Length: 35
Image (cartoon, helix red, strand yellow):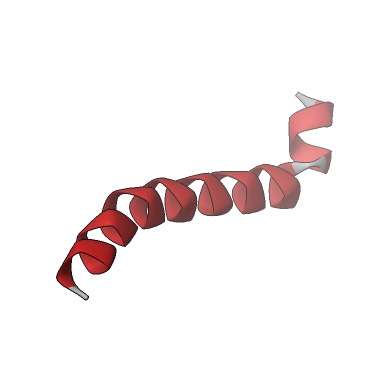
């Protein structure tokens, strides 16, 4: 548990980046198609 507590910020950043990447990958084709 110490490992996760120590790297909590890192995990949060990874989760945020991953979710943003997923959203971007689903939205970008729509934007590209709309342009």
